[in-house]
Length: 392
Image 1: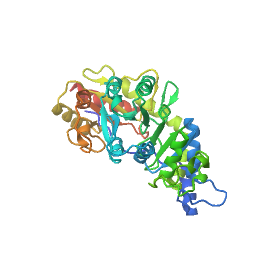
Image 2: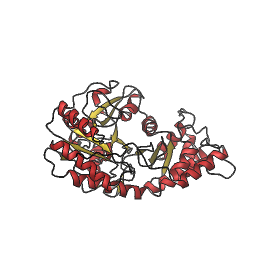
Image 3: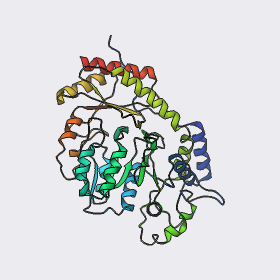
Image 4: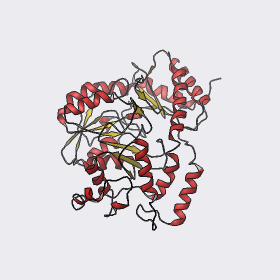
């Protein structure tokens, strides 16, 4: 009898009880708006910013409405505008090129390696085409950040890091999001802290921090921020920076604050699931695991593997057979977008570009979520199902 997995790939853990209690307290107060605080109160959004800045080692932090807003806010603060080229990964999710296109700018895609990271040789070749790189640590895979920053410095390339999948990860001891001038994170339900939707931005640059706070809708109440530059930095910017309201509300900040101290524990649990998957699929003929560099301290909240040489029919068939046994795989090589999976040629707001290496990688790439509602036994069963169907 074939094993059938009965777990749910979209079921997250419940919000912690202390976060629920804090959210109820905010709702009872009626003070949900980011600046609607009582006398002497800091406000949940301001406290979250202060705590996340300390967690990442950043000087400044801004909590916002979504990870996508965080990307757009960072690009807008850097002066990215219509017609400008911005470099980004060819393998990423739609909000990344979407943040570029929303400003009227043009995404220029950089190829992908077999390890699912940005291709540094292609980046070096394309670096003269732009002044900004929006770097996506897609599905939690971090490239050689030391080498990337060497390339960036050599070409005067400003790096904005999309850390939607790497909150809590490190490269050579440096937290993800702290190599570039700005780091952007997501707190959407399927990320590493869960507020349904939300985002965080960190930087050490005082002027950029002030611009992003003004952009997020400060209504000249920026002195109420705790993880912000001093009022003098805002004076030179406040009349010329448009309000594009998007700072996080106090309710979502209240839900997130109790989750931050427990993030390292969740990272350890995700990585335990990831290692069980790796062990279960190791040495499967025809299946390639994704190499993880020694300097990378990753967060294994999702799992990827490749089946090089298989055609589209074989890939679709494998996905269907695994689904029939309860294992939900996502194929990034499908010609039509499905859920969160899409290819660069699906984003028709960007100019069509030749990316043969990325196309070959995506054609063979499969992905699955590893929610923390799964046990190590669940991960072992999932790996057995996949291995059996690959060998079949």
